[in-house]
Length: 382
Image (cartoon, rainbow, N blue to C red; front, side, top):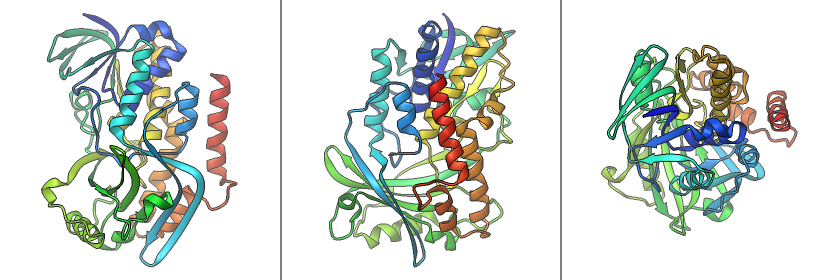
């Protein structure tokens, strides 16, 4: 079976790529197939904070999401006894990923997306200028393959086996709100606690208010990016267990959910001839772990690269890395990586990093202003 473009993975990065293709080149989108090993609706471990420029991308794609959400206007960054309070009305929309991802998929299906659910990538081989993709159902002859299949991307393992595993460990549970301990829900506030940095954690604890099946809940989690590999490892389970107990939450560790996330390194390959990586397969930022807004933007960059490839009959994608680095998504990741290296080495107070990314004034620093201008310019020119 011939396929001009195959996208492996139906999460935000994969569906965003297709939606951008469909907006900018409907004919190419009609010859694009998305496969996903899961069947929607399916869940994914994620705190579900939709922020950054996500609203701009969704507006550009003419998407309105009618799903259960908690709009957050306050973010508390804690480091020991110090607290930095960030306030901006509705700066984050906290969603449950089972709802968010399914809504994106349904939107794309309504625009004639071809989606094969329950179809898993098995192998990839190359024959001159095309790829042969084998799944658990059939074989495809593919011109362009896009890996949108997460941190443990099979596309990456098959086509870029030398990539280093820049993986961060995460643990999360959902718990019903206990008003005595969990003030975040009613205050529409997120809590990010960087204090465990003092115990070697290169990450933070989080508490995000959310709705689970209509019930006011909190996503409690912890992540360790390990961007400074020479530093001692933190005991994540001990730190997380202590935090849960402080909130009168006592589930056994076997009930915790855990998954790795991949942080982006500019030293890593993100493309090969006929192959691109997007979203978690390429990597997120390693300072505060923002991923959803990055995934949505990866889709824009990848779609334009694919459109240009078909127009120019050049599927080398040798400039894809430069496209990412010069785009909003790449500049944001580079800035966050700089901050992560500084704060997780102990050279920078983590709250200063938080202030730089989430400034107190409504007039943002030069870098943020530049990024906002680039988004507006991109939307005007689209």
